[in-house]
Length: 70
Image (cartoon, rainbow, N blue to C red; front, side):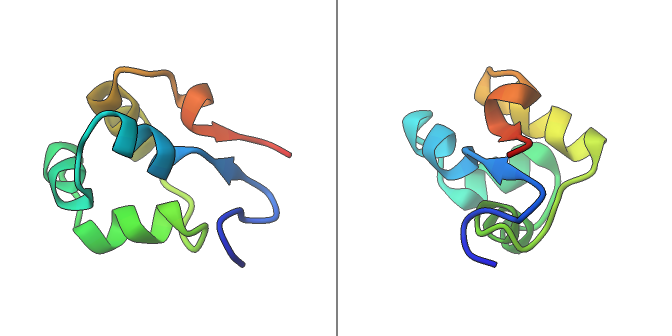
């Protein structure tokens, strides 16, 4: 599948790095495993609305900044 799932594009890795957070730090804030963050970044897993909102809040951005439909 690569970085972008065919039905969803994401900027999570870029925004996480801009915020100077590791996958582990972001996962702790969002209350999920580091593997979940990695799977989202790699387009393997599409997060729930609740998780997307938690990630956006941690990164100080909107869900739309993180994820877009192609």
